[in-house]
Amino acid sequence: MQSVAAAWLVLQLSHNSAFALAVFGAFSYAPVLVFGLYAGTLVDRFPHRDVLLVTQVVSLAGAVLYAALTATHTITLPIVLVLAAVLGLNQALYFPARQATVLEMVGRGELASAVALNSTAFNLARIVGPAIGGIVIATLGVAACFWLNAVSYLGVIAALLTIRRRPLTVGPPQTALQLMAEALRYVARTPILAGLFLLLFVAGTFGANFNLVLPLFTRVVLHANADTLGYLFAAQGVGSLIGALTMAAAGGFLLEPRRIVMGALLFALTELLFVTVPGFTQTIVLLLVIGWSFAVYSIGTNTVVQVRSPDRMQGRMVSLYSVLFIGVTPIGNIWAGIVAHLFGPSAAVWLGGVLTGVAGLGVLAYFLTRRG
Image (cartoon, rainbow, N blue to C red; front, side, top):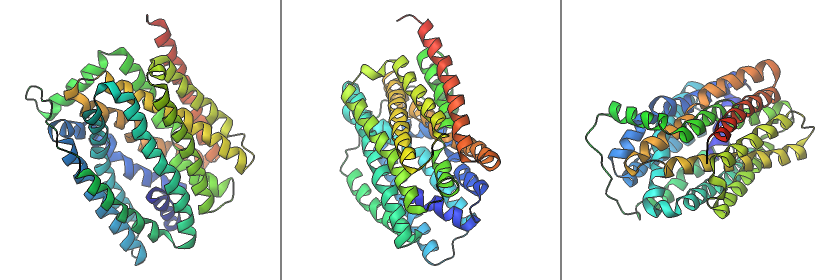
């Protein structure tokens, strides 16, 4: 809900500026890009549950500030950008801590299903939140979304307090710089991870820009309002949920690297079809497929990264995943914002599909030439 509300608030404050929306995305995700790998070193050195608790308290404070400033009409675009940057820094810690906690709780034997179920919970929120968020904005206003989000963190914090603190798997004493260098060397020595990370960088930078493109697409192409935007986000979320359930049911079958790349290629192909969309119904169908294929691809990549990484390196490896999956969003948003401003939102989706498809074919060819 907060994602929809914040994007809509930026559009209101900037008078529907695509550039302002791109800058907001940059402030939201640049901290993950800049500090993501360093955040992974913190996750590897402190109890994961404690790190998660800190991130949720910060998220609660951010939601309250959003709500209070919006309700009192004192919110401005610079304030929104500052809040976005603080919460983005918080996200840099949250994502690897959450993922590392999953492995810590279930072990490697159940990791594939656990990551898929973790993604299922996330995508359920993506379905319910944006749909309700669009309706709440239309009926009660933007501030109500922020208040509801703030209240929800009380339940999250209470749930985290029920998780036991676990001992860490500690390696030899190293500085943060040494820890980051060790993680990068490990990826370079593991060709499967190197190929998947390369494709993740291209898909995350150029292909996965729907948080930026959909608000513009809703207003410019469909000529619709906030409730329609909520339905579009929800459709993508439903597709992602089905993809997560598919991964949970398939177990290790879809974790073969070449099959993971095929998911990225389907995602790219669907993006290419997106530019031919004539109306709302066709948009919904394509967003379902886009959500499904990207979930299969991203969950598969996430699982392989954790399975092939040592326990003491989980935070750093998942942080590298988050840098290439989430942290590159500022670069992608600025790129997509420029393309959308010059050629329209559909062109940004189409070019993202082309670049993702080319990278996917290259990585697939590389994997096919490898034995086994």
